[in-house]
Length: 111
Image (cartoon, rainbow, N blue to C red; front, side):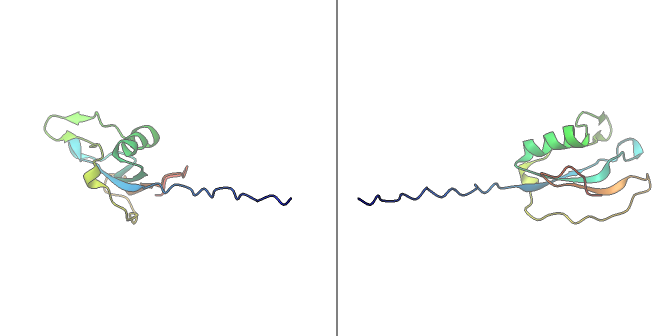
């Protein structure tokens, strides 16, 4: 008696939607700080981007100046973009990189 072969169900990897989030440094007290003037983070959502920026890169969302406001603002879903940012290399007058890019899954930051 021949047995019927059952094929195993085919599993596909789920598509994970990722976006790029831009963090723009506010020039408080007249100077910029490292790591860069602008930081782009690839993340699952704005909260994830904030965690990467704060814990992985070292941005501080608590630094505040009474006249200038916060140095860094947290990400917003309104700022999400699908397109990868293009690095505009170089440094500014404070010798701080202009752009820093962090791609999800990489252990290295792109200067």
